[in-house]
Image 1: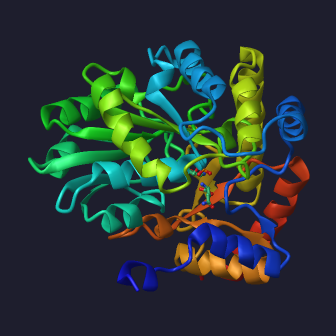
Image 2: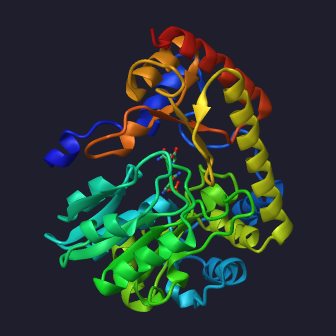
Length: 386
Ligand code: PMP
Ligand code: GLN
């Protein structure tokens, strides 16, 4: 066995969701909505399933979807991508795997921001990459010039950058993106930008793709996912958009990971990406209202929350909320004894974890959030600091 996998724990998302089911707890852990999806997108998939092809899709994805992705990014983010620069994967997770396998050679230094989404590090290590971590510090989680100067070296080949950021819920500002872009250009490094949360930015913010900064279009591999855009996380339709020189080798990795993605789901996503701006604005407003609802309910029961600028997530600071013990201990007791699941943010660290923050998913119906709050009140009573 490869020791990396033999010794690896189960992903925190699978672990907490299984505990939530076993203990009949409200699941505010793993990020998925419980309030449905756009019916027209699902109807398109059903129509394609019944009347379209159910055989292998083209390896690079349906031409209609590759074109829709390029059009979507031109319209929403001002990117000039040819459909030939885009290919479809089975979720962003497969896109990340293909990109890391294709871009990292043994000994290459790969820069990762901590806290980090859990899929990145095992893939970097399996590819033989040497990880270097840049720690973002709560409560602001800001990228600074000093931290970048320390983290980049002459051996940095790849930077994996997630924006909007899971689990901190940060949407990095233009100033921070400019610092990062300058460092990538100065070190001739490639950026793998995980932008699956790109449509979930709140309070009037706009998503700025790293690829749009000066010098970045030719060195950025952008990853996206339909799961978050249409509240269809189970579909696992993702994509890669990159300059041809980078997209080519990544597609070679993809051909021996998933090869292709269900054609009917692709057809529906192609339709969905062309929906009017009103859909995207309405979705953003609905998530923003759910965030505000959860924040208000948390405040009522004495939890101190951090700012959430994007994503489905709101973080609470246990220490500031008067709760003793660390985040892992809190989440374990909360799901087993208080009927609510969250995600300990320490699970997103490879070294020197912050251990006092719990991530809560607000992509839920009002009654789910209300039931989750009852559980969180019980959990606080169980673990209140003396
Ligand atoms: N990257 C990040 C930052 C995510 O939060 C997620 C899932 N929420 C993914 C990648 C995986 O996306 P997919 O389900 O399309 O594989
Ligand atoms: N990205 C989701 C989250 O952060 C989980 C995805 C998964 O379970 N692999 O909750």
